[in-house]
Image (tube, helix red, strand yellow):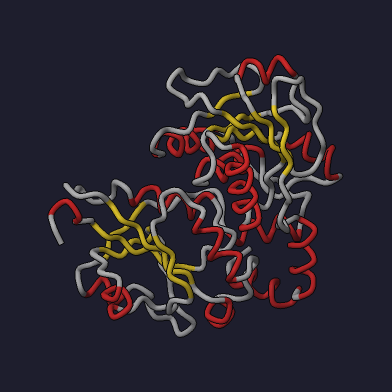
Length: 327
């Protein structure tokens, strides 16, 4: 390998159930975790459903959903499926890994063993700061108890949204409503879509890929606020407005995000964004003749109703899981 081909290779593994913004932030932090003169290559190992059930309890998102969802993250270079729950040196050696990364919280298998003992003993383990405020356990609590309070403060999410935006190459502009203006350097060929983007899963990643391909340029994505989602769907979203925006910014198929997007954009908004194409996947949209309107087929999407059905179908297993986690 030549010097120009050299990479500092990191390995993160885990369940990554629902791949929420704390998981994503661990990946993002890895970009600058250890000073290096070489570019960073991030490999993510993902546990199978069977491994999670054995060591933790039933997963909320199935293994195929998790594998494909994580492949949609802009900072992930490679996904390895069905990795051991306890990180093995033979596994990371197979992928030429320099360092194993995990948050600063302990992880034990079903027998109480440190999942990273081998990597630590080999001097190949580094920690990132665990991101507080969300967990898969808390998402299951939201499904079991939808009226419980959720986000205590938006400010940490806003700070994280700025960090996500600035860590993308190029940066992902995050605008608000009809007031935002895209930077001058933003590409001229622009497509626009919008929606709820709740329970962000592999179907959403595939949908955004289809939309971006159809639009043929950079993709601007509008995200409805919580009140609009409830108006459209008839129930409170699982993920709050800024949580859904974080899911969009990390997605490799998204080039700009607009918060508090209207249910249907006005023509002045389209004009201010200077979009050439609108791409829909559900509701129809009538634009003036200067804007092309395309429709793509929507793949199956994860929803609150589907997740609630899954939890209640295995209610005792999920409740036992929650008790073990102290929920």
